[in-house]
Image 1 (cartoon, rainbow, N blue to C red):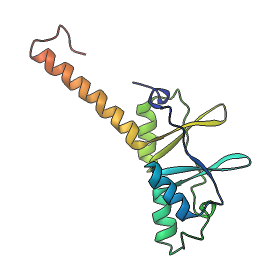
Image 2 (image 1 turned 135 degrees about the vertical axis):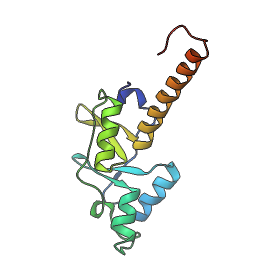
Image 3 (image 1 turned 180 degrees about the horizontal axis):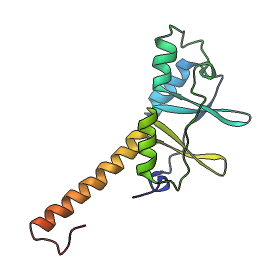
Length: 146
């Protein structure tokens, strides 16, 4: 199975300051077609602001997105992974914790961001290849099963 590093793209994660309002963060996420932003301060990455944070901590709580800074409603307890960890293990841990967004850290710096969807898509691709190989084997088109 592949490692996290193999799924990373050239697309850099988007980082914003904690002073940004929820409304501006939501607009940024919508424009970039992403579900999470990294939140940085002078020390580095201090949290992540996600669609779930928007719903649970802003909308349901009745806060004004135009005046609420994301630092007040972001997720601070980050679950991260290193780039050389195995996809299957990380996907399992994300599902157990009900986490959808994964900052990838190397040498103390965020080098990428993956979603649970990215990991599950890879899993589906692997299974699809296995099914194709087995189908070819059963139909006598291959010399050996995978």
